[in-house]
Image (cartoon, rainbow, N blue to C red; front, side):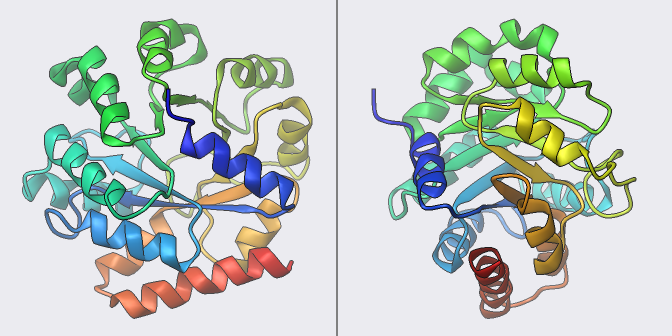
Length: 262
């Protein structure tokens, strides 16, 4: 089986004492077929990992920015089939690790085993299914593991330490640390100051923190006690405003530089 690009990249980052930068894009937004070009540009600008969001009509964990992008993506005709086509196109020109993040209903409609197998064949490296708690990991775990994909689980500010350890033990690739209560984007209640060090101390996987990070300063602060950050809504908000690619590249480069020099 081909070595997993995600675990290899995170191992390299740890060895180099760097901080990982993961960026979230909604597949099919702003236009059908635009994700490959955007993902490649972001990787060239300093992103270590690209998360591709799979749009769904009832995105319970997402705030207004990602909801808007998902609605536009669905209106553009995005399906799992078109998302996998985008993955193949990205993979033809870039080895950036790719993670698919989304909800279970479209996967069930497509066929779960088929989805995980084809995702791996197209060049996906991991999946994040926010709806699936630890107790239900077995529902998809064998198919995910059997396809060679990383199964990335989430912990939140309300997660007790013993449960963090259990979730970490069931995760692969990295542990997704949600830094605020509520949905994606800004406005959630921030975790207490000991939360990120507590997660890092309990985890064996690399810990990447997301939700509510929008500036270089916030990225540096969140990355300090962890292994890196995930930024989604702040990027998509800029894309909703129609910022040109050069501006997006500069913004990503600023965050990359801040993480590297902190």
